[in-house]
Each structure stands twice: as structure tokens, then as C-alpha cells.
Image: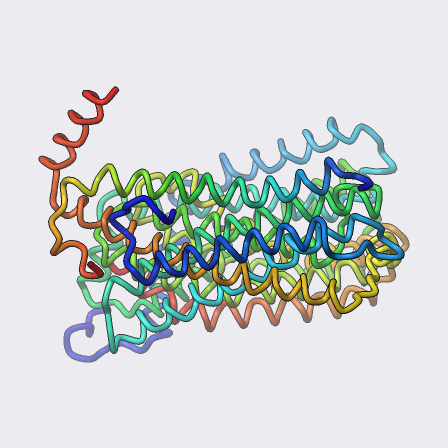
Length: 246
Length: 235
Length: 44
């Protein structure tokens, strides 16, 4: 949040925040007003400009989680910072998968007439969502920071194995049934120049948003870890203060 | 194991010892026989109440068999690691320098064997209660499917069960971690069993490619699991 | 605009949920910040 002082902010994140905010406004104006309606889809195509960038960010986030987990496990640099980046990134990824599932089903309601179809991509995205909720639950299990880091890093790498397996089996599961034509009709969008630009703008904006969020979130997690490691007396003091505030 | 101190026993030998230990624990306690198998039969009866149609039951029997397997598996996995963690036996094994790969293989095979036994009960239940058709060639497909699926489930169950064992709140965490991962096995095993049962007009021969898929899953999770199990349970 | 409620709703939902999430963890880090020294914050 630019303008207010936050313990996790620096000059760089504040600048990134301001630029991201400007881009977000730009995206909303272009997405909702300036860009044209699609010949087939009409105005519903406007949902694409938040739906597609959301799932893009989710993939980037989970890829980042896997990469930093691998770096942590590779043993050359066992800094807990890697673990916190992995956690922050996965958490943000879960948020964006949720957003893209919800906006996607709203979009589906308009174009397919139904919130959900058992299409391979939708089903494996739902699995992606649940898998990383499980990952976050494992991070919250407690134990030492090292334990958390190793456990969740292994789990993040297992998820990388699991996701393609699930996707692959869901694809052949669907291929047995008659092709669900509903999922393929109505989504063909003829993107003109401005629409393509708006989609591109959305992806850029959301990627910057993601970078800003990960920077802040992993520092917030570092603060949390610091408080946790400073021990119980601190927690008690904090509780007392919270009680006074209320 | 008398020569443990003089020579390092081979991986497979240790794995076999652990497998026998786990199976012997089961034979002595009879938890699977007296509690889990009846539980899985109850699931099958409840499915019949919920679906309330003989034709539908016969059609979806393969899926129900495997769903019941997955649910029962949660109980079995929790049980096998509760035994290990209750008196710190898992820690003792690690302190004794037991190779975690051997530990993983031994426990996985033991779990797979127990699940196989459970599936014999479930297939029999489907045969008698759901009135499915089962010919000799179909029985062969079902047999191979149960074998391969249970090996795969054994690997997956041990891997995630071991992760959940060390932590508090594991009772509720295990299903969340385990069930998404077993989804491919559920899909493959259901289709193969469908062919074996001739349900939904599936030919028996259509079952074999699905069994092949189950074999691939089992191999992948066996290899990956034996690498990942050590760091996961390491305290 | 046709289906305006769905379309504007999905924009509001997207940016609203991101905003709520960010506000939640920033507030939380501000509330624990007073217990920490600058050495806990190597980025400052």
C-alpha cells in the first residue's frame, strides 16, 4: 500500500507498488471500457482480462515455489529465506487459482450456461488448488523452521510430479466419454489488436502485482518467524497489547 | 538380523524384515480383519442406500469398490503409522541407522498387501451385493488391477502417511494430502475394473491398458517415494 | 454492457480479494513490528 509506512516496504517496493497501481487502473479502464466487444462473445470477453492473467500468475507462483524449494533442498544455500519465498509464493498462487476458478465459472455461466463442466483443464485446475491448500496446511503444522522448510520443500517437488500425472489421467478419463462440446463452443475469441493488447497488459500488470505481493509477503513471514523464535514472553506481551487495543 | 553389527544388511533384506514386522503386527492385532474390513463393507451398503437403484449400482460398482478402498486406506495408513509413532518406534528405527529407502519399501509393500486383502473383500461384496457379472477372463483383469493398484496405493499411502505421522493434527491432514494424489489410481483402477466387470458395456480386453497405467503409477511413486521418504520423516 | 453484474462482479472479486489479502497480512506485520528490532529486518 503506497503512501502508508509498512515494516515490509522499501523504496523499491513502494516504487513497484505505485507503478502496479497505475497499471491496474489502466487495465480496468481498458478491460471494461476501451477494448471492443467480441463478435461471438459480446461483452463477456471482458472477463478474460482478469481470468487469464490470474491463472498465469498461479502457474508462475507454483513454478517459483518449486524452484526455490529445489534450491533449498540442493543444499548449497540452506537459507530459510528460500523457504519463506516458497511459502509466500504458494499462498499467493492459491489465492490466484481461487480467483481464476471463480471468475472462470462465472464466465462459463455466461458462455456455456453452466458454472462447471467436467473438462480436463477445469478438473486438473481444481486439483491444483486442493494440492496447494494441502501444501499450505503442511507448512502450518508446526515444528522447527528447518523441519517446516524441508517437509514443505519435498512436498512442493512432489506436487510438481503429481500435477502432470493428475492432468494426464484426467485427460484420458475425459477422452473416454463423448467430447464435451459445451466446453469447446463459445470460447473461440477472435482477438483484435486492442483486445490482444489488453490481455497482454493484464498479464504484465498481474505479474508485477505478484512480484510486489511476494516481496511483501515473504518479509511478513520473516517477521512472523522472528516473533516466533523470540519466544513465549513476546507472545504474551503481544496478547496483552491486543487485549488493551480491544 | 544377528549379523547386523558385523555387516550392513542389504536393502531388500531390511525392507523384507520391516514388511514382515508390519504384517505380523496386523496378524496379531487383527485390526484390518475385525475393524477395517467391516467398515469397508458398511461403506458399500451405504452406497446402495444412497444410490437406491439396482441398475445404477451394477453400473457404478467398480467406482464404488475403489472409492471404498480409498476411504479404508486412510484408516489403514493412520493405523500403520500410529503404531510406529506411539512408542517412538519410528525414531528408534532411524536412530538404529535403518536405511529410509528400506523402511519405505518395507512399509509400502506391507500396506499394499493389506489393501489387497481388503480389496478381495470389496470385490466379493460387489459380486454378492451389487450383482456384478464376473467371468474368468474378467476375474484375471480384476486380480491384476487390484495387485497393481494396491502396490501403487501402498507407495503413495506410506509416503504421505509418513509425512503426516510426525506432526500434530495428522488425523485431519492425511485425507487432504492423500486423496488428490490417489486420483489417477482411482481413475485407472475404476476403468480397468469396469472392463473386468463388463459394466457399462466395456469389453474385458479394454482393461489391460488401464492396468498398464497403474503399473506406471506404481513404478513412478515407488522410485520417487524411496528418495523423498527420508527427508520427509527426518526430524 | 450486457451481463454487467457478472463482468463487473468478477473485476470487483478479483481486485477485492487481492486487496483484502494484502491488507490482512500488512496489518498483521504492522502489529508484530513493534516487538522486533531492525536486525530482524535485513531489508531496511
